[in-house]
Length: 357
Image 1 (spheres, rainbow, N blue to C red):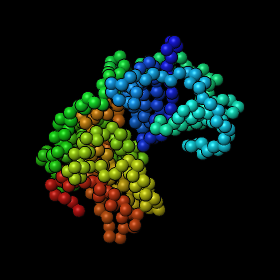
Image 2: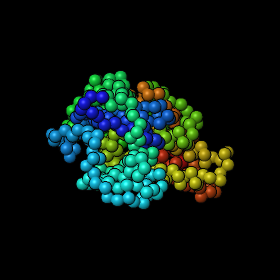
Image 3: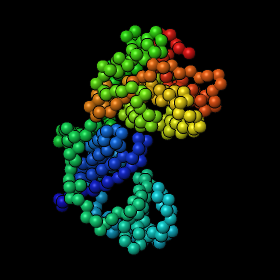
Image 4: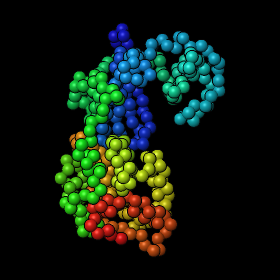
């Protein structure tokens, strides 16, 4: 390891798409974040290359890795019985502080268990920092291979050699171009419409077939797979497109945050409980997710991101041609799924020349 030193952190972080393995490397003025998404995202990798600056402001001085002996400056506050977040444990730990920096360590091993600083957040190390375990030397060498050309599927502000490009948030984002034009277009052209719900689905499935992305029939997916795909699409979306839809009251707008969607999905799962496998509620539930996932893919991702998805092997569903309806004697649970389904198939309001009921 070079004399200058580096700081490396390996994390397993919970996110709306499941657990994401994150590797962070801070060497000199360069800072790399490598994320590996779960198995159902086909192990997609993302690398972010950036520089750390004082106050996070462009033009300010670079910030370098924290010194290896930074804890030498801390003062002992006391031994405390403290609840540890995320692991739901209460343990006796030694409390240390230096200015706004706080750390709690195991009295016997000295391993850091908990760290906290205002505005910087909370860090929990369930197994401690394991200071007695020598880390692999290659973990401290940058740039990571995944940040170089030909590495991660998503490389953000990285040059071909894996170093930060030096771009800042003050520089304008790439123009949306044709994607913005489509977002402002309320009614699609006739080539994208059908005379009925079934014909509309067939027409749009034809266009999906012509896309570079892999696809398969809706009925071959289960609801869990579709929700995982939607969570990934939600993360990859360009919020500027949704801003257009929200401003125009467009049916393509995303109506809830991912957190609220997760709550709504949990309520739908509860509503479905007690219905046998042959009940039509299950097909309606799945087909609604298929329509919504396709809409998000087509109308919330920019062209370059859709192209990236196509090379990862990620599969999107085809549209189910069946137009589900809610019977007059529907159970309360069935009625709730019906309501959700109607929100999910709003594509029919524009792509179908005759609204089916």
